[in-house]
Image (cartoon, rainbow, N blue to C red; front, side, top):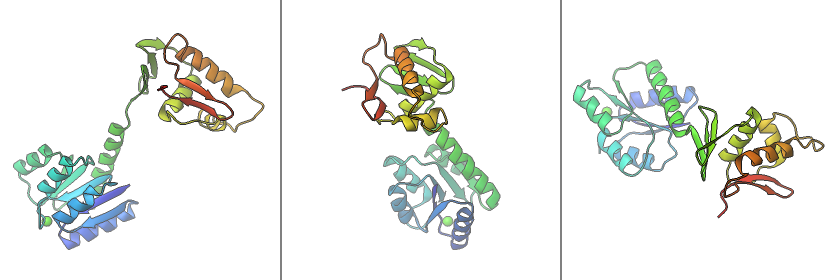
Length: 225
Ligand code: CA
């Protein structure tokens, strides 16, 4: 997890960088607005900690510019001011949280961790979909063309794996280890039988057929072109 800190006050910047490194993050530090913007635009940042008052360009403008150019990482604003208007302005510009100086490192770390958790769960969609096939991870439900399909737990796990790695040929050994939690034994045709049953439920009576066998290699789920 990479965190970018934009903070001009040397003590605060160094202190945050060291603390976050010790907490296991990869940390980059920019000491003014333009550098922060530049580093933020390079991408690959999972979270941004942004001071409001910065030389060259204030934190609001940095954030505005990052958002305009498509950077969606969560942003935690740091500010010495505790003005309601500042808070509102930051949130309107797309900041996710706000911390008023002075703050304790423990509080910052707690906010950072919770923002990263929220960010991940928002990114991790609760529905996987290919063509008209839909798998709802939260409700453990599968539908095709709006029709409910009943699957066993293993079939559900197999379909989830195929959907998560759609377009990739998955070898039987990989399926065995991921879904059955077992080492592949070439004598068993457990995977073949399971795929056949899954395919009968998911593909029979529907167009197009989504689960394909790749001879000698494994299985792939994809929408044929
Ligand atoms: Ca400052």
